[in-house]
Length: 350
Ligand code: HPA
Ligand code: ZN
Image (cartoon, rainbow, N blue to C red; front, side, top):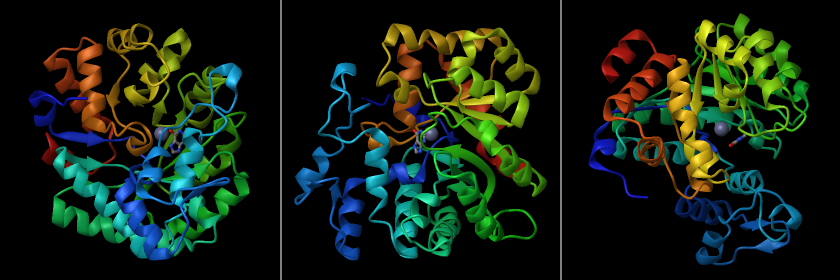
């Protein structure tokens, strides 16, 4: 995917990226050596770097009748397998610094990365190692690369709610509120949404709101019960943004809810394009504009999605969505508008 000079030149704000989805193979290999961790998935071990690279060919499911494969990981399995090399504070720091450097190359000026702390604490990693590693990178990344960041704590929605609430309690001193260290300013929901509607986390969200944090949730494109998840997010939980949420287009009351409450969507076109035909997908970007639904273009998990980053996603929106240069600039402004940075930071971006 070639990035045009126009897309390259745009200053960018990234609002939908999972930091653990930016762990590039060279760093993963290095961390595996450093921590003496075998690189593996189920009964397969990746003994060489080339074998590791092959493991990034993921499948959507393990059911051959649905076009899936039994022998390769699903996207989320590959993502969590990648996490296994992250153990020490230094590892989380290195991961985040590698990503913030990548941001500088793409003219990303400000980013709100998601982090899945439970993906680490459930493996026995100390929450402090994760939080301090990311905190140090937040500070040094801003200085060294000129990329500011405010992070988003994600509950793993397919884990028990109480587990997430307990980790949240541990992490709260690292939040922006109550004179905290200032790493994260929002909470969200990530991982497998199957039968895990946002309403299950209603109290956890209410608590975060009471703590002064912002709220968002994934409502994955094409997910079972996606319309009900979006409805709950808008009307029952009262989130300020929705991550994906593209299926709202199917229902007038959802479009109306997004519009009247000013809830923007953080879209990741390539994530949908992996499993949706161009003609079925990209007209939706135009429809959202026509209906007055605010959205911005983001990347999700670049390393596990064919190495397509925010610039590649914007390139796809530009080329396949038939958007004009002025509209692409407007989408960039939408991201500034939708982000939760301080006003001075916002002014410094565009
Ligand atoms: N979807 C849901 N949860 C996730 C993802 C995703 O793409 N990446 C990391 N957690
Ligand atoms: Zn996501």
